[in-house]
Length: 221
Image (cartoon, rainbow, N blue to C red):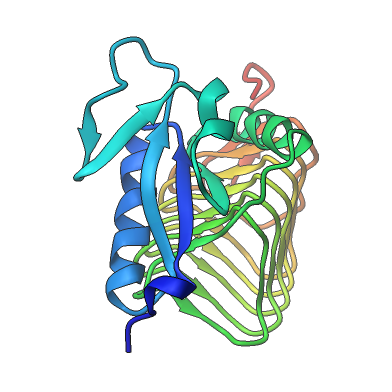
């Protein structure tokens, strides 16, 4: 059954780009499935965007005016991991509360832990005892297997697979269709290229491509 108006949790989406549209759609679909979270609008600093609408949701004001909008929580909709972390930390310091966006077609084990401000897209799978940190994106049809940890502000891209008992570091990017074999560690801020297969531990702050994934000395995150 749907929630009554007295149970509505008003959510403002911070940033109205492509990631904002994805978050808006997730929240709309979740609301149709009975969630009490209702996206009431966006805030965004892009010139000329205030007064427009994204998926029928109004862009209400610049980010600095967020405090003037009645709401209970926010979600930061930025695809760039570092930018998402910086914006989230700024908003938390101002007293904002985060909420996760979980698509009703995501499959999340009851024993998994999903951090505040994270986004689980349609088809995302998070299996038992996995821990998803704050502000993480698990994108369309991506999966995180049992007992793995994905640290704050990382991104498991569409179609990517993280095996069991892995550790994905903060702000790491597992790009489209990449695979991290069970038991592997990917260091903080490391980028695993599209279609790569991680079969050995990767340190922080590197870029790795290929099958098996190899560190590219000429590339930096």
